[in-house]
Length: 111
Image (cartoon, rainbow, N blue to C red; front, side, top):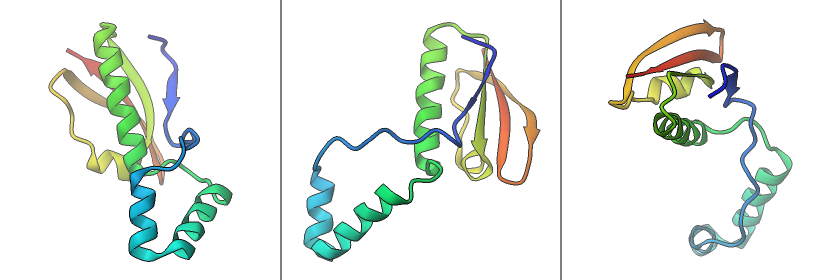
């Protein structure tokens, strides 16, 4: 793996892949207007990835790095994501490389 920092706070989520059962649930429970408002909000006001999105991507990166027998992985996540993250067993330690008000840079060292 490269020695570059992977910034998970600025990456945008991939475009949605069509209509899902969750969308149908939204329409039934809150109505079509609320569903359309939510979708418009998502489309026009794309911002930072949510904490859940960051943690999903981080888990996938850790799994891939572990399979590739990487020694370490450097990532930038939001401070809210760090407080909700639990270290998997395959990680030996986590070093803080830098921190500011809303992001934290971590080096994840594998066992």
